[in-house]
Length: 171
Image (tube, rainbow, N blue to C red; front, side, top):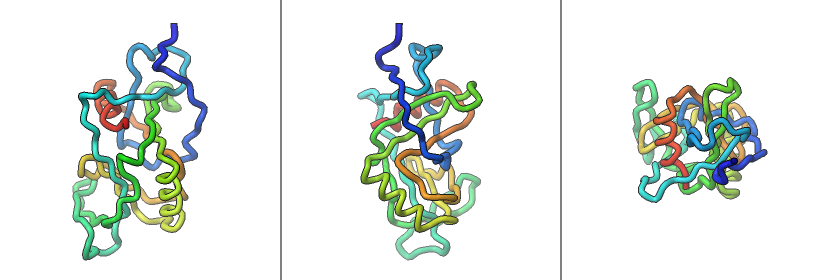
């Protein structure tokens, strides 16, 4: 019998794999083994929500920017403006990656946040963006093309780590 918490979704993540290796969400054992391609993850009431921020990396140290440690231990200056935050995440979905062995997650943003992200990345192609989780830069990719309503996160993660992170990112 299908778990009612496991729903199929046909939305695609419009080529936004820029958060690769940032986070991973995996299904509960009740969902594992079903024919579902993707399902929603909810955050339990007793799990605090993680602080997600996506900011542009400054070319030169800005007077109102923030100095952070990059994913490789390097110093990065990020701009004051937060392009995307935790409050902008409307839904979190989980599904198998293309290799059919590892799991990935798709963050779906609110319509306002999706438009803001699209506009910001359309005008800043080639610039580096920092993705911070609880104040720590976990990845800082360069924008290759305008980003849209969602972000696909892929990687090779354990079920336990993925589950914990999924719960923290969900609204």
